[in-house]
Length: 295
Length: 308
Image (cartoon, rainbow over all chains, first blue to last red; front, side, top):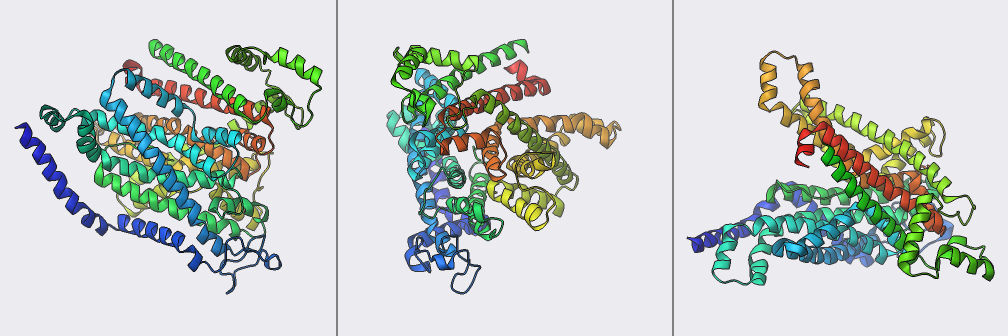
């Protein structure tokens, strides 16, 4: 009986695993954001070939120029091509997203699984520490880090990671608490599976969906914070062309040259919007009940 | 209720201790020793420095230093700005009031607008209006606050000279910053209160009240609005951290002299006493808001105080 139960669950998972991707891609609110993200990665990878100019190449004689065939979106205060800077700006963006996720997901999941699966005193301690961290809003953590370590890409990433780890830890812990009570886990235990085996082979694959949803939202959160901190002058430093930094530099020229501000802002808006749309749709499909943390 | 309040106050006390620890660690981690940090460019003579070290207890163990720090913070002795020599407590007090006014304005605005939009959305359920409102509220989740602020400045202060683009003054200086900051929460408030309204309207006792002949208006006020308010208070409470982040950015965009701008400027100009005081007040504000939200929540929803 127990064995059959486990078999059914696996069979269902396998058949869903085969069918989900094809069905998913038919939904425009998944296909469009995915295509956009692929485009973003392609632009970042091929920036050297697509961009009309190098991001740091400035022609002071041609500073603050309106759009023209030579400079499709005009130039900034140092005579740098705005379009090229927008194109190269995808690089720090993808760098921030991938580093934040690559660090905060494994660490958060590790903490969450340990606390949720083993329970007891360990769970109590971990939960209290996570709660204590969550008392401090991301902005205060970020300002703390930047004040102590100085501005820059690495420190911005560090601040976002510190804010995101508790998010993943909490979510994972909640998911594991539910999952470990299910019959098929009991069955696996009865069959003599060890704890690491159960966690790796059964629990993690089952909770991957909600984690993927949270990862999407965390990616959009990371973009938003990088942009916000760079806009405050506390994030990515010149001459790296981050979109938020472009807006920081445009502040002085805003009244006369508002488009220096409008374009990078629009790029941030569209990118975050795509990620959020993707996350919302994935959540509806994968797990409508869970609550996620997002900006 | 009393048990709940006592329990909640105890949690806040722990948080308060965590905040003191957080700012103390910040003070220790900042580049330079505490006296260098306190005095900035006008460094004291060695004799004054030695006297200060004794007075601040810097020759004592770190735990003792922490308690000296706590007692200083509690007495309001937060040092002086290294640039202007103004007492930090006075600076932080002014800045805090400014931020309080701004956030209160923007929350009221967001709650009122959100309630109105969600009401429209529910009243025109599943029509174009409903879909439009839902689409826009999801869209606002992705809106960068600073960008939105500059668009408002562009339209209302640069193209049409209707409102000032920044600074502090009369009520007209508050309109654009509040509108900017309101956008941080408007989408979420609209979405959550729409869901709450629909949920309440479908409940048996509301259907019964209607069947018994209670007018639509009465149903809305007695059942629906009350429950929706609970949802709105919850959203505001849960998202206060995000609101604070939004305030930091909004204040910078509009050169509004609040806490956020004070902290950012302090980091950029290495004015560490101001930074520490600012972080202390900001964390304290988060703590107090969380406390108030939980209290209001308990007042509005009896289940909380019984269960808690």
